Image 1 (cartoon, rainbow, N blue to C red):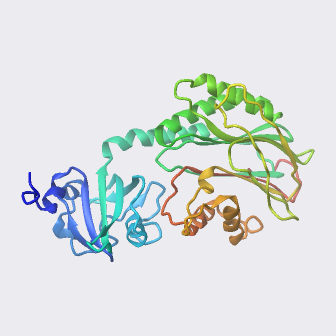
Image 2: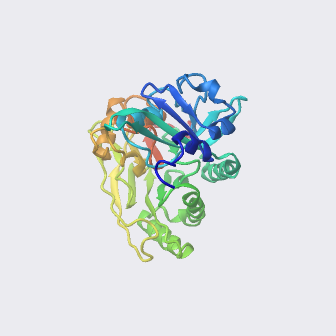
Image 3: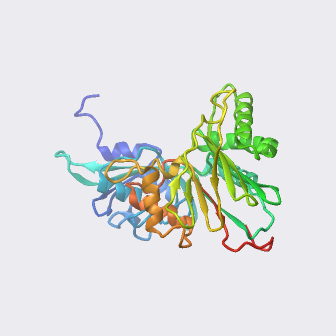
Length: 380
């Protein structure tokens, strides 16, 4: 077929099974493909000439964020930045009948012959047949992570977990080992999505098997690494992690690191500090050995653990956020002196970046000691 015989671009776009629409720089829709009509029920006559942020698709992401403004809109970000999406984004669009259609979306800028951005293009693939099983997997994963602790007004734990996909590979866990002792772990399995989520089931099994060793974090870490190696030799998964034990009677935390970002300690009367906790991720080497770090943990102190999804975030200047940038975001919110919702911490990181969503799973695990030292009458 010669170039002269090539069909019009609109005919090509109308021939593919994924939905496609094109907008100008103001996100006014100028083209709506036949597959876009089929998937959403919206006909071209319904939407062409309207802005994509008008009352049409009303995109939300898997976490319920409304995407049709500017801060979270992938298409707007592509038009402003000139960058294509590097990975598909899962969104839920409103069909003409009012129901939500799960979609895998990619976006990019549209350029003219001079290289100027004149609009944006979005393609979307209907995930309706695939999403049911994935959402069931998410429920199963959430159930495996849910743990009830007896009330203790001396200490409090908070978790915040946002997976990049419907399911993810971060695994936070807490256990009460005795009246004054609590064990904890935050692990981040390599990879994303369903495969990583399945490996968190391994971690859940290993946590239950070895958590009695947590009073010696280095021994616990060695046992976890060795067991992960033996459970999954073929695929060679690994899990960056940090584990530790809080001893309220001694006022200490002992920790062993396994490749996860250093945790941040916020003493009640001193400046915050990152605690160096070095070690190989679980599952890299069967005979890996770990060392412990001990810090004071007094009433009013707070320890924040986080997966690398909170620090490996590209900023608007192209640099990585890293731990220092995360600390700056937290301090801008008044954390931890001011009670800050972890959702606000997540959004502060996004605002400092060039992203509309995280490219990795993100988990925070906060451990804080109360200034009031009473008995077991509070909540965790």
